[in-house]
Amino acid sequence: MPLSSVLPRLRTVVVASLLTLAALPATAETVGKVGVDWIGNDIYIDAVSDPKISGVTCHVTYFDRSVIDRLKNGNWFEDPSNNAIACRQTGPVTIGDIDLSRGGEEVFKSGLSLIWKSLVVTRVYDKKNDTLIYLAHSRELTDGSAKMSISTVPLYGENITWTNGRP
Image 1 (cartoon, rainbow, N blue to C red):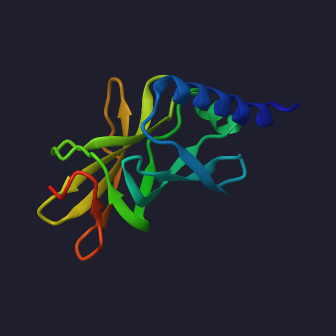
Image 2: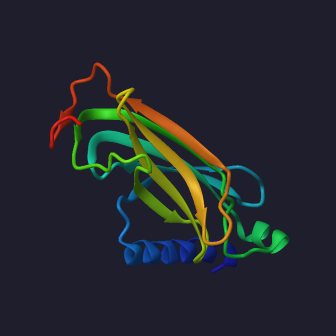
């Protein structure tokens, strides 16, 4: 079996193992994969459902480096921090027991490196504007990244169910 077909499978096994060990808040389903160059770099599109808010789905993109790119540029165990997010209402919205603080709540995390870097989606509720804010960013152990993406889901005028009562 060629190395180029083994590495993606190895990456999948490593990511799946890390996800299992980390007991992540939400899981993602890969719904798209777009090749971006001749050396095998790809952009993945994952659908992420908010575990505490039914009826909201976020689509998150991330870059997956190929074997050739890893050989050419070194840094074998890490993908770039570039990502994007778009969140929409995809059904009737029911909001469970969510963190209403300014710091929000992590709803999804996936490894971008073997150990040190993660893609994180954090939800913040903007009470004044009755809006859910989803922030996608990279978290690194030593150096944070300024690369981020944001998406909002306005709740104003929608028929929303709050399981613990509207805040």
